[in-house]
Length: 112
Length: 113
Image 1 (tube, rainbow over the protein chains, first blue to last red):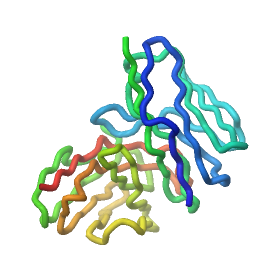
Image 2: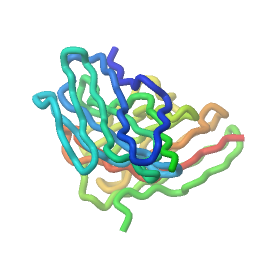
Image 3: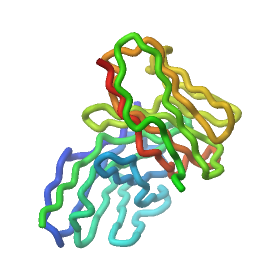
């Protein structure tokens, strides 16, 4: 079946470092991917998305890379700040296209 | 003005009770969802609903039922609550059936004792 998962459950970085959060997916037909950030006690917030016809997309301090050959995507956060501490999820659409399927999440901890 | 609002934020109840969680969105979206987040932060789709179609995740017990009085509301009713129902429940909405970025509510933490 389809699944979207992340390689590491936790990632600890120092303030100012760059962070890379990885995600592997199994459905080779997936055509749309999203990254969400969930802060403690809040709902997930949209960060950035990418369609399968792109390899890279940049936002403010964030970049998503998509490698369709190995079915892998990553979220890069530049100059990580304490406010970036949260759980990060990748997601893609289910095969029916009726809902987003979320990976297991990576907890990013930023120390100053 | 909150885009997707859920009430209550916290709900503590005894096993066997029936409870409802309300969700309202003011974004004009036509599709709404319920997700369950377990203690390991795993988010699992329960339902997706627009004014035409309700899609139920087959793993959801039939004690759970979504009710939509109108396009802006999707409530979650749970019968005969069990300990394993304890989780955080999130409502979300999106525009169209293409399932692009959702907007989530802030969640309802349900504790069954």
